[in-house]
Image (cartoon, rainbow, N blue to C red; front, side, top):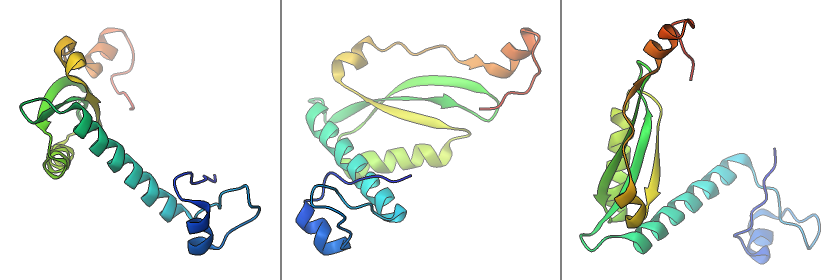
Length: 138
């Protein structure tokens, strides 16, 4: 699988990577570099969202959802600090303490006001009650 980089100017790409097939094509970058660039883009987008949607209290809203090791799903609204370093530290702490896969979605204040946390669901119990095998794979 190859990806092309749109953010680097062609001249910089030409100087740094020397992989020019044609003038109108972007060079294909090595996988570790592509992953690093994707990580930088994600961080930039997160920083931009935080700057654009911070509340007057200096916080941003995050929809945190996933399920734990027992198959119980959860969905909750978090209000995290709008400072990028503090925000990323909170996210890292939550990931370190997670019992299973979880995800985050940044919300604007209007969406956060309409947010309704869903009730926790025990997927193992539901599967058993529905007559399915008691194990699930996520």
